[in-house]
Length: 165
Image (cartoon, rainbow, N blue to C red; front, side, top):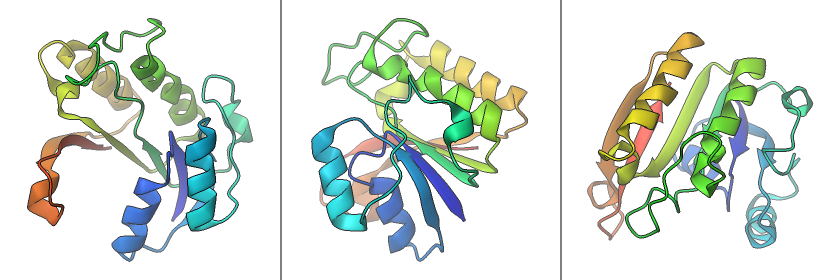
């Protein structure tokens, strides 16, 4: 399976695929944080980085089967300023909407979104549902659930929303 990791950070989605024994090849990442990039490359080697998602041309991304996009959570997390992720708002969390151009152009078979639990909180639900409608418009069936890391062998109470499309 060919994978494109947007907002790759240090490669958590890639590591999860490895841990699960899923045969995959990361064809590209999109990351701008120099420390995250250095960590990613230290763990996985040099990987094509297409850079800032706001600046990329989706045609420059290699074809892929799985698109992972754990977009920045700072503006939706209850630990942050809760500025939201309205499209065009300029918040870091509003970078989610940049993912549509990749999905529209590349049409990967599968999508994986991961973010904080408050993504489906009352203040954010309208935008979350709007996002799911956009994906449905491209033919994706969407399934989401809040999962807690403490139920999966991680020694912390860490709730996250996962969306599989």
